[in-house]
Amino acid sequence: MTDKKDHIINKAIELFALKGFEGTSIRDLATAADVNVAMINYYFGTKEKLFEALVEKKSVSTRGSLQELVKDKTLNSLEKIDRIIDSYVDKLFTHRKFHRVIQQELITNQRETLTQTIVHAMFPNALAIKTILEKGIKNNEFKKMDPELTIATLLGTINQVLLSKKFCLKLLDKGPEYVPYDDPKFKKRVIDHLKQLMRDHLLK
Image (tube, rainbow, N blue to C red; front, side, top):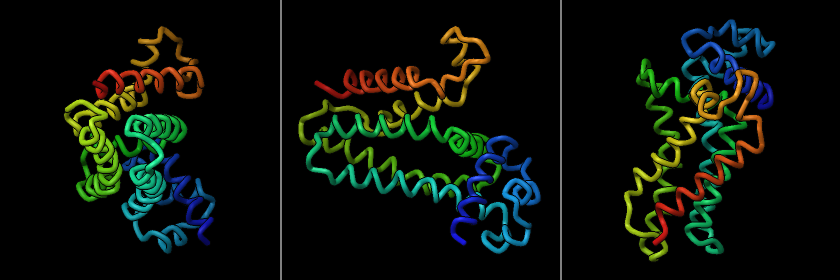
């Protein structure tokens, strides 16, 4: 049963990314997942609850890995930031459809309940990164800086690349057939750039 529920969530991510929340009906979701409407209602009740379930599902794994990273005593603060960059770029590039769904809702802010669900799910992850940055300052590994805006700089760079494909292609001087998010060399370029950016910003 859990597999069927996960299957519905995965199909919902694809449809919401393609058609948006408003443009996707429960019937569309049922057809894509090859289940009946009653099954979706049984598991989730409403489209909004399904959205909340998919946000929570995707956030939980990231939350757990970040909390483990915060507790890790074998890595220094910069190494932890490097791990975060590796993980975020890899996950967001791989699951860019899901990321697009989330950002659409945050930007449009048409449904306050859904926006609050996203913020509530994402906040613990940002808080974990903030904890690492503040500990780096406290341990004299990092210079004094603004942790909150450092997080915004880090995530904002990834968002700009992911959410503006046409702009990204223009910057890279590539044709429309090129998909930068599927190119391992481009992913490495983004990772390397962010690591260098953080070193210049954080280290004394």
